[in-house]
Length: 478
Image (tube, rainbow, N blue to C red):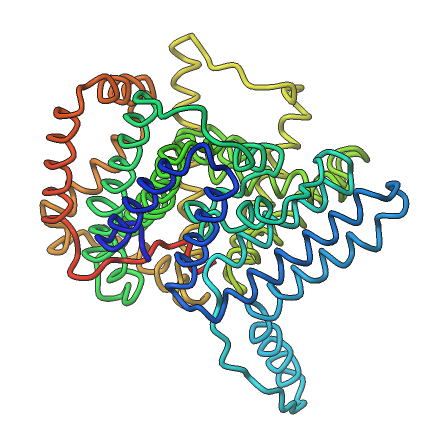
C-alpha cells in the first residue's frame, strides 16, 4: 500500500478518524493501531507477517527476561536476539548473494560446486524493522532503555505503519513512551505542519523524483551507450535528485502521518547535498541509519578510541557493512568502500589540521568561496558513489562512467520538462531552510478552508504529474 496512492489516502483517513475517536481508551486505541499496522503490512503479502511477529515475540521475551537480570548475565539473551534478527535478515536478503559468490569464487580456481539457488522474495521493510527491534534489545542490555512490559505497546513499536517499511529507524526511548499514552489533544498547528510535510513529500516523490526516474534516469542507467555524455551526466545528477526526493519524500509523508496521529518522529534528512565534506553528508543523510551504525557498530568496534589506524579501519568496516545493508551486491559494497575511504581521508585531514572539534561556517568572502567549492566536490563524489549504488552491476556502472568520457553533447532527451524537474530539484535543495520554515508556518496558520484549497490544487498537480502506475519507493527494496 504505497503512500502515493488513493488506496493509502482512504486507509489513512479511516485510521485517523477512528484513532482520535478512541482517545481516552488507550488500550483499545493501541490495539486498533496495531491491527491497522498489520493490515497495512499484510496488504503487500500477508505471509510475511509471520517474520514480523517472530522478531516481535523474540525481542519482547528477551528484553523482559533481561530486565530481571544483572548486566553481566544478559549477554546470552542479547545473542539470541541478534542471531534471530540477523538470521532472518541474512537468509532472506543475502542467502543467494553469498551462495552465488562462493560458486563464482570456486569456478575461478577451476572447482565445480552445485549450490542451490532459492527463489526468495525479499520481505519489504525487513532491514528497517530488524534494525529497530535490535536497537531496543541492545539498549535494554546496556541499561539505556527501560523494558516495555506491555506486549501490545511493544508490538506497535515494531510495526507502527508510518515508518514500518522504510523508516525512520526510531529509538525505543523516544517512540515507546509516545505509543504508550494517548495524545494530549488534537493540535491544529501540528496538523497544519503535518499536512504541509505530506504535501511536500508527495511533490518531491511524484512531481520530481518519479518524473526524473521515468523520463531520464531509468533510461540512462539501462542503456548508457544510447545517450550522449551530457545526457548521461544529467542522468547521474537526476538520480542524485531522484533518490533524495524519493526517500526524503517518503520520510516527510511518514513524519506527517505520524504527527496527525499524535506521534513525533525524529528528523531523518537535513539537506544532505549542502554538506561540505562526506562526514557532514552522513550527519545530514538518512540520519536514523547513520546514527544507528555509529551507536551499534562503529563505537562497539572501538570508534576512534585506539589511534588513527583503528579509527580508519572501524570507519571502513562500518561503511562496508552499511553498503551491504542497502543491498546484496558487490556494487553496494564498493559504494560503502568509496564512502569509508573518503571518511577516513576526511578524518586524517581533520587530525592534521586540528579541526576535529567541529566546523564553523565561514563569514569571509574567500571562506565562503572555499566552502562552496568543497560542497561542489562533495556532491560530485557522492554522485560517483550513486553510479555504483544505482547500477545493476559493475559492468553497468563502468558503462555509465565510460560514456561520460565520450564528451558528446547532443541532448534530444533533455527536453524542457526534464530540465525543469532537475532544476527545481536542485535549486529547492539549496534553498535556505528558513524559506521552508516560513512556508510551513504560513500554511499551518491558514484557516481550514484555505488549507483545503491548497490541498485541492496540489492534488490536481499530483494527478497530472503522476505516472500511469504508482512508482514504488526506492528504499522499499532494502
